[in-house]
Length: 98
Image (cartoon, rainbow, N blue to C red; front, side):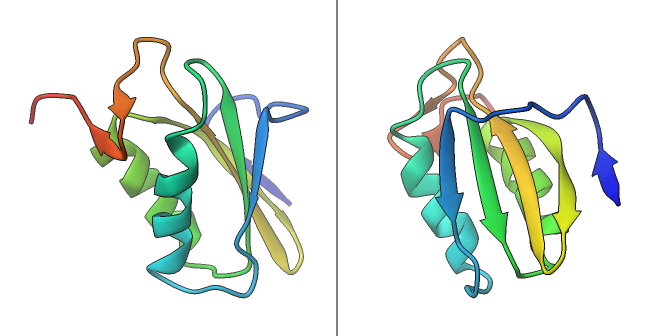
């Protein structure tokens, strides 16, 4: 079963495995990793915590990142996040105005 907002990428530029970890650790690790992701690049997040289906899109919205969608690969959930080309994400915090 695949759930998506947009067409999911065939290959991500970066992969983060947070399988077996639960909230808030997947978001914390994704925040740390996103600092090293280049503008326009995609981070693939592999998790087993079903909460990421809600948490990752909310984190993206609050951080100025683009949530591309997710797919299920039982028992794994694979989410895709793109860092905007404008460099809206620096030093682990959004530079967008609230």
